[in-house]
Length: 315
Image (cartoon, helix red, strand yellow):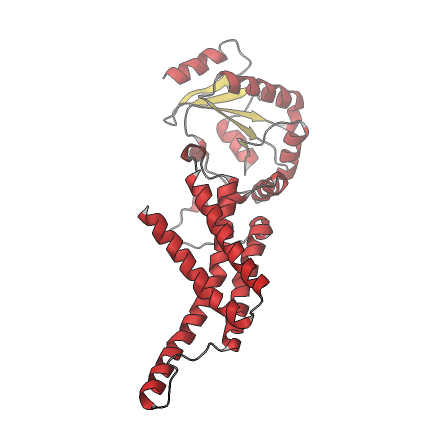
């Protein structure tokens, strides 16, 4: 209860202090009423959302929006408060000086200067506009910034290695599936390198495909879709072994309505095919949760393949 009192008192104090700039600039009762109505509605909405918040469901769209409106309301007022407080400090010192230096002085604090209040409101409008842009458009204004990092002791295996770092994701405010898909496509378009070991989180089956063996490509993906349902404890990772552009690789998957999740492509296809001896194309590598290869030459179309998967789960 005390925390609620402190929170509400803090917000109302900011509202009241910022209101002084509005009151100085205009005496219009409609403007004053709108100011307090909006402020109280925003505060009331936050209180309501927090009181009805369900931890088991996580942060909902409505509570994220309520906090966004609170930030939109409070931030400009804090800017105005700083300006007004600075003026008040000056008014107090000036009033004290006049009061004790002049016997005729009857007013301790002079009235607020209108131009200072206008400056406060003008400066407050800057973060107000920025926050509105961020809430409405900025959240989908994705940017790709490329940096080349240099390390004297970098192992030669990482020379030219490309990493995509994704930051500032406020996922609770995302409400446009098309924009989210665009972000995913933008990330995939970076064609970042990935260490194979980092993919292994639990029992895994790695299979391969090529557009040169188109029927196998479709059959293996249909088969894996069935296996994913039967064996949810196992990750199925597909690796394309072609030297083609990644856009062709992704387009092929989408045209056949296959998911791009856990789909990868070799950076150096020819070298990788030679090292892993990826022939025949039906080859599947079965790996346990400790990154140990259980079978380096399994076949997902063989009669005993599912028995091997069951053994992998129980291991």
